[in-house]
Image (cartoon, rainbow, N blue to C red; front, top):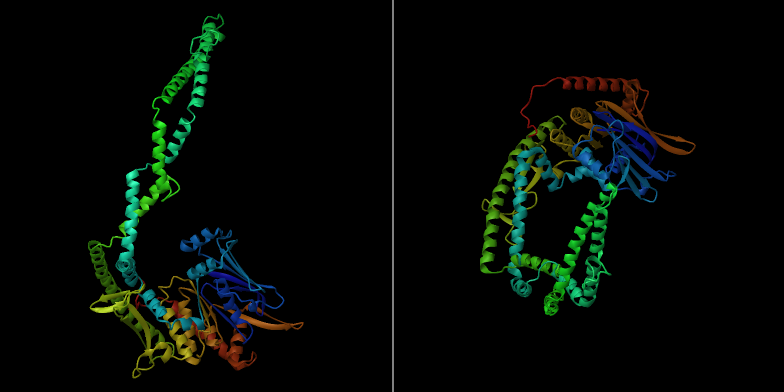
Length: 596
């Protein structure tokens, strides 16, 4: 969870520390006091867009620092490890985002500078910020399909995984077949060129590293006389002169003489040296024999140089065309063989590809139908669960319907797939379009939620969905900005009640202007704006219970000192406390869907 957040130099907030409750934290304050800066700070901490206009005048830089607790595991641990960051001594994780007056931003995680995208990746696992933009996002078909899939859990996730695996192979085969068919003449020409090159290489039959070995042999054979003189001189130095002149003994003769002298000495210290000379004599014998063999081989084949030069000429015909050296030529041949395998445009090859395409299409249709069936079942359950939640949010007559329809297409679509006799578009998330429909009352027609719902109703629909998805949501901290916009009275009470229920499984942070919602919070933060020496600044304060009464009274009546307002505020707190106490008691299970 997000244990605390420090905001400095952001908008009207000069320096504020927000200590958040593990359950339900609410943020209130006068209009213009800077409540939205709390959400802006969370967006920055989540890797959102940085704007220089948000930097407080005179500050030069705005910064937001968040301390997370109990998150250093699984994917989050991998993100931090890849970034080279570390946790603090108490196991908490620090994330920091700063924005300069010039608009440039910096991000840090676990004490290390990181790209902003790392904070975004981290926030995807830890934070979900819901505001007016998120309500608009809920109107997109892809987002509505994602909501249904989250609710369905593994019932959809597993067949969808199988669908995507088969789809990837199917698309690859379709693309290859299309390319071979449309470019058959061009590919046949390329294949002929590749075959010619492979035949030419095969006729020469080069071996790995052969050109380098031949170059070394040529170098040696063109310097025969110099090499013979060097080898002969070395052999004479080792074994003695070829005519056996005693005045020019070799190293072997000298060592032999030394051995005889030491062997006949009366001193054991000298005699002990004789075996070491014997070892040296054996080594020199080996060297002498190898030198003799080398000399014999120099004249073994007078025509060898001519043969090697001819072979070099053959190899050069290949290195001029295909690669700088023979190893490169062999690599080209290997690649050419692979390319040839994908250029077969014969009727047999095309028929085999078409058969594989059809086989994969049949498998894909089965998986697509399984995904659609699972979504259809889950859609009915999701619609019932959200409708039930809406009944407690002053929308008792409203009904939610979740439609699952296959996206029809025609044969011109490269991703067209026939499922149950119908030609549909096989997209990356299946063949279905999902849409949330709302019936304002039983006699009303079902319409897309964005057409049938007002702004306040749309907020309540989103909240109802979040409550239903609470068990399936892997994000621990949920942030709601003005989720109660356009709501009042009894509906506001119910929103506060639902948020409190959501806080039993998640950390919930809400920015609100409704006292009915604020009364249900476990911790109440107020953003207070003041002016000193002509400078306006805001601060964030954690309220005690008595101070909460004052703040709620202000929110109710617009004045802090009225007795009526205070009595109403105390009554709201009492109702909220009683409701939370009752909700905390074990309840009999309902038939609602659980996470699978």
